Structure formats: structure tokens, C-alpha cells
Image (cartoon, rainbow, N blue to C red; front, side):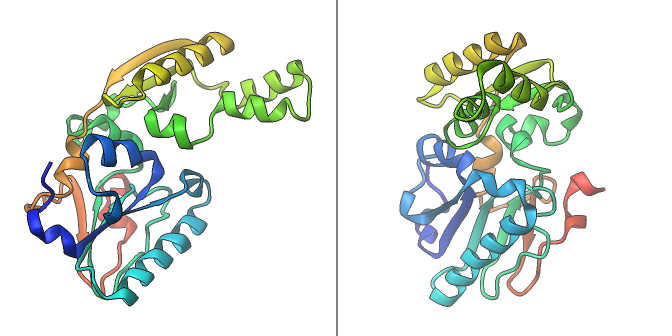
Length: 231
């Protein structure tokens, strides 16, 4: 994939590591242009905001970047107030990463994403995120099986199924095995949906469709009201 041609030298990407495989292996972006932040930051939007603003400030200080693409959604208002003194900011117009991993076909049909009964997993979530199985393993260091199982089962008690978003990543066979193992362990349903990289891909095109992206110019800040999920 060619990302904005030669102009890419003036552009950088700051993204949650949940998108790392999709960006590097799927879209084949140059790793030296990417800054990946820990997936766990989304649990505390205030901390995510601070770390993201810190990275943007460092790029501003460096003075070599004109446009910064953010691999995030609004993420619990974690991106509200984010700004750059010298760079345009471009971010998916999404609540979080789940719709983006599904692709543009869900951008205007978010009701198809069942957040109430489906526990979503992807290549990046499995590689870098936390989930019930990882928490179970952690609990085993302190408690016995019964207690560890009960505690982690409580975490997912409102979900009916584990849903793997398949974006064709090289790790898919391992991701499938991992998700099926967790599904069997917790006695839940398994589901797989075909994702798409087209929403991420569209982020780097010359044309900016406000339906899919939020764009702010240097000196302007991202505001929650700019995101469709707030309206």
C-alpha cells in the first residue's frame, strides 16, 4: 500500500497497539513512522489523554511533522481536548476500535455491532490486551481454580459469546485456537465475523470524508461532540 506517496515523510501515526498488526502487516506501513501506545491505557481515559498529548507534544517539539494520524476512537472521551500546535490531526470517527476493526460497512450501521452480548477479540486484542483467560491465569497465582474461574466468569457474565474479528492477519490460526479454547472453557458460544481494513486504509487517503474521520487543523482541539457516537 502506498500511503500518501512521498508526503508520508511529513506524517506520523500514533496508535493503540491493538491496531499494530493491521497497520504494519495488513497495510504495510513503515514501522519507523508509527508510535504504538499500550492497549491498557483505554481503561483510564484520563491517562490515555495525557500520554497521547505527551507524544504529540514531542512531535511538535521535533518540528518535522505536518499531519498526525491517530489510531483510536473517542475511547471514553480519552481523545477529548487533544491538540497539536503544528500538525493536522486525523482520527476515525468512531466510539472505539471495535467498529474500525469491523470496517466501513459498519460505520453507518453501528447497531449491527452487538456490544451487549458479544465479547469482541481481534489479533491485537489477543496479543496485547487483557481478557478473561489472561485474568484467569493471573488469578491462579493467588487463588485456586474454583475461585479464579468464578472471578473471571463474573467479568463476562453479561456476554453470551466470544466473537473473533477476522482481518486476515498472519496470527489468525493462533487467534482462532485461542478464542475457541476460551469459549469452551467458559461454556459460551463462538462466533466469527469478517472484518476489513478499509476504514483504517481510508484514513490515509487524500480526501477526508467527515462521515468516517474527524479532522482538526493545527491549534484546534478534538472535541467529543465532533464524533458521531456522541450525537
